[in-house]
Image (cartoon, rainbow, N blue to C red; front, side, top):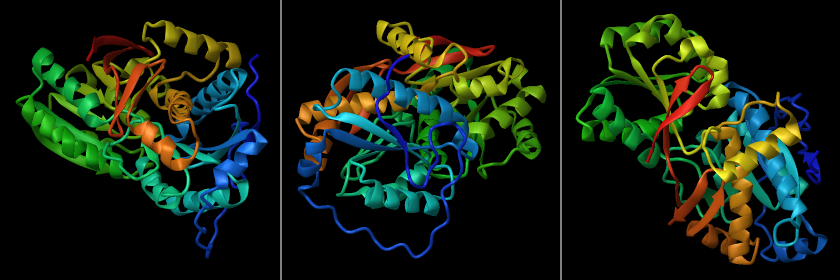
Length: 393
């Protein structure tokens, strides 16, 4: 068993026992005072780097919580065994980011004020990121790890996930060229990632000679998809592009398969990884494609080492790790590389180093240029409860 080093629970979140509860409701919290510019220099004397990891354990995206927790703990274990980051052992605290946004912000405000965290990390929906960045801006580094809509430029926020230009665009062109896909129906959860991603997606569909025959946004938490499937059937698309989140994607794809549409209509998803695929079930994955910077079937020494460490630490029956969960491992690898490049964990030099650099992990080399991450992107077809990579871009 690998040693993870110190792991704590934030004051407004439960311990990492996978028995989670939402943060308490708070009202009338005072604004947080600006941070002391010498704070990191003084804190560095105690040899601990306190990272607050805001992972979603509840609500529709909560399905990724267990794999995200495991991935973060594995990275902490590996980094601490090698001396930590700039000689400071990581102390990791978990906070649930799955409740109402205002409650998550209240939790984060408490974490910065009372838990004295040095770095914020996040694997949560973009609506939470937009709120948290107003709190962290100019105060504390914030590493945002999962797939997102792109365009994050807030000072101190470092986003390392897949974005539509590199993730969705090549997949759309491949389906047009190889499957004759011209008619597209877009369905997504009703929040910022699908809204912004669909804007870009429409451009890529036009580039590939196709057109959109329908689009809709579904309230987060919706699990009755009969009306959505009726509209899709009536529109008769070649491909349904799915930007639904977590368990919403599971219930939709199950219903899609059970309706018989899967036999005649392709599906392309941007947030269906191995975790979600397991929930959908093998009987409902016909003609389902996913585009991502990470699948656990990637054949490389780095990924073999990651998966070997994951299994050794958590067992063969651990939650399957896919792109969203694994991004928490990537986030800590990125933070270590950026800190070593900067020679500092202070906000401004760290953020400057993180904007233009290359680091390596299970995804291979990830390059950041002007704050935009690029990596090898894979198009995979669902094969039962596994993915089979059919093209790497």
